[in-house]
Image (cartoon, rainbow, N blue to C red; front, side):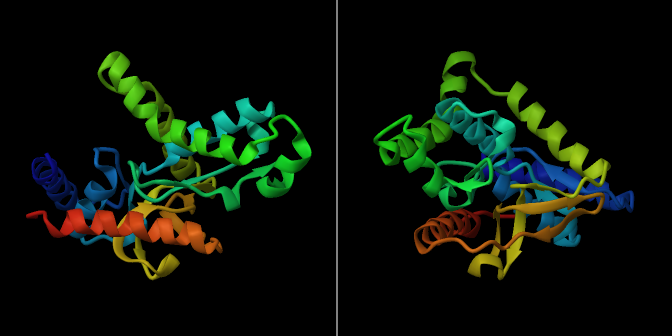
Amino acid sequence: MLNRNAAIVQEIIDDIKRQNSKAVILMVTNPVDIMTYVALKRSGFDRERVIGSGTVLDSARFRHLLSRHCGIDPRNVHAYILGEHGDSQLAAWSMVHIGGIQMDNYCPKCHRCPNWQYERKLIEEEVRNSAYKIINYKGATWFAIGVALVRITAAILRGERSILTVSVYLDGEFGLYDVCLSVPCVLDQNGVSKIVECSLPENELTLLKKSANLLKQVISQMTF
């Protein structure tokens, strides 16, 4: 499936190049991080112009579950899923804020759940398994990713400078090279205008590197 999808992506990218298009390429086809890498390498475009939908949907699910669990309006919840759009993704708990309060400080004062550290594990597992549940019920997912794509394209077309976790090529950020995965990015009319290289604790940085290494292993086995 990887090599078949990669071949299709390369054909489409060749068509785009023939048109001398200045557009931003937004990849959605799964595995999206791998296909974003294939599209970037085939196009030869600047990395800012070739991005994947990444973990924008996963991050939205994460915020929703946190909102439901904490009893807080999701508009007051900031949270991100980083890494692969897949099983090796990680919840960046160090970046979670509720009403401007870092999660580690908010949970002990909330008193909604005495075992909040255990609850975090359950929430993260539910985010990771959400797509599998939907596929088991109806065979595929399309509505939620459609909403995520509206969010991404709106940020680009309107030049919103929104921070979204799209899949982007890393060249030294977070100590990672030659791989596409999701990290916080500022989006405007040119695509990714800035990669937000936040300071992650050692445990989260280790998980991000593990996710990157898994993707790189897959790429090394492909023929494109």
